[in-house]
Image (cartoon, rainbow, N blue to C red; front, side, top):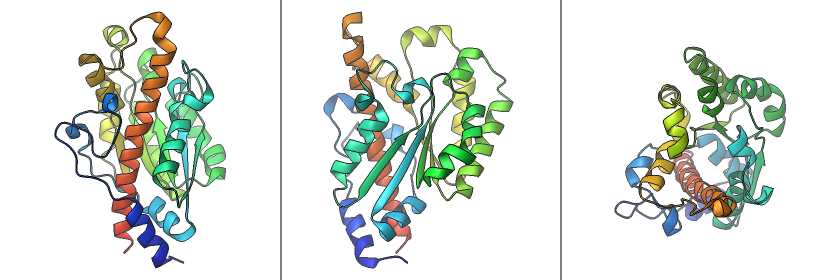
Length: 254
């Protein structure tokens, strides 16, 4: 049963400030800021918001490949899912926030799909962040099959009453010259137009940082620290997107 008092508390906690000119919505560290236009998708997470209003907690599952697992970070605690849990918990002190990291290096979308009925389902997630496309792009896998796999995965997650965020591949100048990411980015963007799916445009975000000389390690010695900073900024921006979606979803419950 829905608790009106808790729902009001959730809405009060999710007051998101209007976006500053040229910045992502909300209050994020200066080095993480990106143009607001990158987050013009109207995110709404009604299932997660309803669970928060009912039980005062939220379970988020992150599934993906190496960058979700935290490859290149100084520790598991600095991978973006771990940082996301810390940021959301600080922003929502009245809510029990749990973020489970199911990242696995080298995982394809098809392999993630196969994990949904078992590993993902048993966690009973309210929201699933699915990072995908990188392994497929590196291997130049069939771009006709990739969208079908994502759509099937989204259907399975919705059957579990989970809201869905799709996160696309990372951007780096070197890899962009060697790998054709565009067909996979297009497929992810198209899948994100399905009902109940939101896009986190990581590729565009990181390209903006690179083109504006932000979060770019000065040397190989700085690489690990740079990765930690990137993961933290991804978590900060993801938290803003989630809070906005929860706010819209909570309003829908009124």
